[in-house]
Length: 445
Image 1 (spheres, helix red, strand yellow):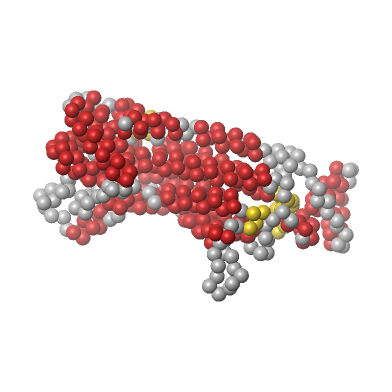
Image 2 (cartoon, rainbow, N blue to C red; image 1 turned 135 degrees about the vertical axis):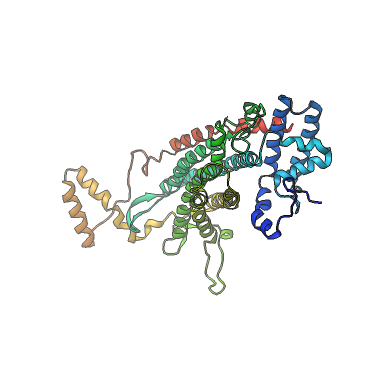
């Protein structure tokens, strides 16, 4: 006997079914416990408007908590003859509670079920991402402060240009993450709105209390217009993907720098042994594979917004099955980014810095601007000073003064790391993760 809740009185061609279901069961495993949370809020609301009895609500909530616990233990499965996570949860309830289990679907569609599942899943993943960004940020700030007095060459056009420092290099990536966190917060705010109650995109004749489910699930507000709530499918994922991509952009650039600086031609940094690999033929090799993979994975993640856009950008309003395919690129992306962030934080923590780079006279010319500025400060016109120092370098007569004193905000001698930390703390406090955690605990207690 078929267990598909939505099957009519004819048998679906097996190849058509295989094609249309695709990887949906696999992708729905990401959403399972969030489907349970959404159902708990929905039926609590249904009881308040008289569509469930109190004893029915109590029994249903108890069983849903059991299913949630199974999800947490990794024991939840979507059976082969069950279409999706929503059907599996409902099936488990009807097996235990009979027809009572079928009542949980009143006033909603699988359309708004998957919308709320995606929102709950995504905001949880965004919280994890934010926390891991902060871990990497802290490592970068710590290293920036530790090596603030160690000079290194700065480059333009990959040519030795002017004095920089490891304080500046580590700190630059820390500040980049503060801007990335702003994108993440915007993604969080757009995600943390309740679509439940929009049903198939046109609302319901039941007197649903959407404000109640919004509060129960810890959302900041709801997607008010039911048509817009459905239009948010794909749009939310694209917006979140842009936040993922901007973090990935910072990681990719940092990884490229680290690979470059780790090479023997630079020897600016030394990576931890466990983060390098050997060669099958060259016994001396220590390859920066971890940073190379961070770079590749991060570059792949930077293509995610375009993938999602191309799937959903020519669809009119209303639901279409095209949107199912977004799950396949979107849901796994969080684990990939989290992996990269964790690896990057570990390597930055263990990274050793070469404190004697400038012993090599090859870098002496990078102090030319310091000498030009010194001559200008003592009365020589800037263009004359520029010409004199240039001729001295060509003649081999230039002797650099490596004792430099930059004082303005954000320079070698005034990193402003405390200000950068303030920016990060201010951004993190704007998420208000505590509200969400409290709401979910209340539902599950």
